[in-house]
Amino acid sequence: MNGAEVIVEVLRDAGVEVVFGLPGVHNLALWEALSRSEIRLVGVRHEQTAAYAADGYARATGRLGVAITTTGPGAANTLGAVGEAWASRSPILVVATDIATTLRRPGVYRGVLHETVGQEDLFRPVTKSMRIVERISTLVDDAIAAADLALQLPRRPTYLQVPTDLLSATMPELSWAHVEVPAEPERSGDEQAMRAAAGLLAAAERPLLWVGGGAVPLREWDEPENHYGSVDAVREAAERLGAPVITTYMARGLLGPDHPLAVGLPPHLPECGKLWDAADVVLAVGTDFDGMMTQNWAQPAPAKLVVLNIDAADGTKNYPADVVVQGDVASALEGLLAGVEPKQPWADLETARTAARAAASEDQPEAMAMLDVLARVLPDEAVVVADMCIPGYWYAALGRVGGPRRLAYPVGWGTLGFGFPASIGTAAAAALGQVDGPVVCLCGDGGFLFAAGELATLAQEQLPVTVVLVDDGGYGMLRYDQKHAGQQVFGTELVTPDFASLAASFGIRAVTVEGFGDAFEAALADQVADPAPTMLVVRAQLDPPPTTSPRWYRKR
Image 1: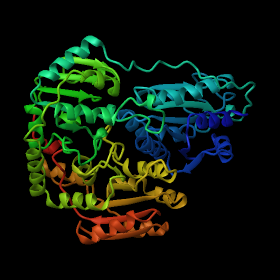
Image 2: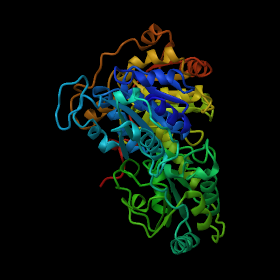
Image 3: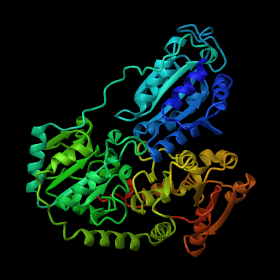
Image 4: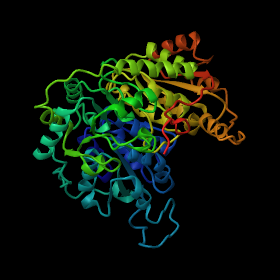
């Protein structure tokens, strides 16, 4: 086997069924090896899309997402997307080539095609591990470690760099024994901390659960012992405590949209923020209390805080905890609540939820009309990939999310342009049967144009995604920011194409409607039922929801 075939075999051994990438002169040996493998290659039109698609795939499935790129500018093009995956803790692996070892001279830039001095240094801030292959004898160990480490906690991107000549070099001897990688965190909490936490929860009169992405099962497709999160454990904890459950963006849909204790709304709505304020004990599960969820920590510290996290430092970096239980969600919650008597649910939870929705509908009726249509048309199995745009903000905050891993939203780094390319990865998972519902991309005109060329990828690969593109003629959020600050609208208006005609030029069925009325609902239902890629363009202008910083009701 040559080096390229070794890498493909390592990926196959790691359970990889699809990779995303763009060919270059230095990585064509990988394309040759992939052509003879069972792994599906989705060829994209820009390297950033390869990493975004790998991220979208990883979020939807819990599996390893893989992006393959060439040397120098090709590798550099992925960085914005890799940064989003890092901030959102997505397990992706970037496989990049480097110039040939025979042409490299340490510390000297010689002017070889695509040469970069210290290419790997570009990736240092946005990966948890970098494996730089220097000789063919270490390739197996380096490739296996890069794949394994991406999936280990804390889950984040890893980087594998291989000189182009080693892709064609023959392995002298092949061994598939896994290399030593850092051990995964312990799964059970400290007994003393467990008893202290149980005591606080037993005495609580108004406990509340704040649940983050760490509660979402990591490998739903794998053996049960590989699950660090647990839907059942969180549900049982909420029901025993009678506690409202506020979820972060990464955990949206965890209990399903209809569970009576799932608040289903963000704490940025004052009526929901009051639930936090009234709690006498908050049990924080798998969260780090980031600035986007806490209005940059203007949300006051709770009266008592119990933190359950696989990483104690991560769980307590933003709010001081009274008790910290370091461990896996499933095993720790079971032990934590074993001695706690069942409690009655908060009597005012439904009142708060109803009042919050009524206030949002009165404030922004058109946005809520959009969400109502999406709730009626999309089945709970649907996966919605939302961009950093006003319609995406609304859906991520207040939309109906049918279950865990059914919302992908780039709130980690806030990367505009994520939605469309990430939906390619999610749709690839759907095409492989790893996602069991329709895939919908919710984006704006500005963010869509970051990767409009990927319409060619949709057409070529026939990936099953419905692109819902809300066209307001500019960067709507930035336009709002300027108006909110009393400034003139400047540089945020855009000349945009006829998006439906653009999609049609690639052979993709598309339609344009005005607003979110009956025509929108009928077109959405029609397109979501179509297994081919489709586009629905909606001409409308929306104001942002209360989850965006200009509208935060808490101020520092």
